[in-house]
Length: 551
Image (cartoon, rainbow, N blue to C red; front, side):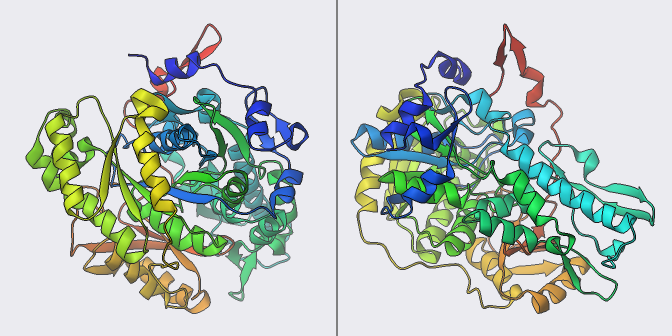
């Protein structure tokens, strides 16, 4: 059987102008990055503004194993299948971060016969968007230090500077950094680029003017009187917008089946809000009848933030939700260890189904979503396991379909596509959210903890409690963005399946004023990941001019 990279390299890609033409995008509205990648010119986005919107399909997942459960693969396979059954469909997803590419999880372009391509380019530098975001973030950090160095006319209190540097790589050594400066030592650190507030702003901004305004609204420190100081006080937001101007244009590529795909922006869902850019999503909805997008990690993280943050901010609403599950992940939640997940074990599978049911209930009961379960097929899944899972899901009142898009491409997800069309055409309920925006900050955190995670209590460390009291007073009407492990409903990755009554331990809160939310850090979550003992970079190389080992 061919590997993902061999399948991608064997594909005969069409010129990106040909892909754009199918969408009604003229060649003059493309900014080409080679033959198979292009950005959409701002004139194209302006022209599309009066067109009606297509249907928005959200793909999310159960709580994953460390290897992931094929959410992007299912997103791509579904879009290809929608095209196969005669719909004008496209993919709209996040850009991969090089941290996971060189770390443990690998790339984020799908797999098998359900990939976006050119895979190596997308997984590595792509069009340089992440480099631009990193540069804009670090320009602001340099301007803060420079202002203090040259006399500190704004009266910045160096001890209150909260702005951190970032880079798109897993480097645990940079989590805590001590700066030796003119005024003395200060402590700071690096976040991975996908966790930066600039990335969040980039993905939530509606246009360049909104981008600039949000960047200017970033709070970086306080002055000696305790008053907030913003990026606009440093006159940083204009230059930051200039760095991001070209990056802000959505990237157009294709799938192996030549389905158009917009890939733009890329915050993680465990430490950020986990969704591709608003501008790409809204553009896709003008270009296609069906837009298949995704939200990172499990539905407790990505889907909750997609609905409570992105949809509420941008006025979006999915017409249907596809919840991706795998038999191996359900066995993992039923108590199985990674080494034994390839062996049949129906008892373990049935125990783990509670994780799936919790996600279904959250999406349906809390958010009012129409949900269908897509079982992402693996070759070691047995017929008895498949039947047991489908029957258990059917008994819960939801529909489950076996999908083989990895091995068969669009044909393997055709039944899923038809079910999604039927579901999306039905009238939906009015938007529902997990919490009221006017509720107190602590009540919002409690709502997500109790309604989504089934936590019995929320516990605040001393630092978190101090910040909660201050932020609740100054910024009561912001959304919350919980940062926690993706492997559990709790903040403890060892608590698998569907734990209830656990304690959500909040260790810190960070204000993202420009993005419009407060990050709530829980448990041992890190905003700068580290590399594993055997990183994926070990197998990446260049052979005869070709990049190999990216997956």
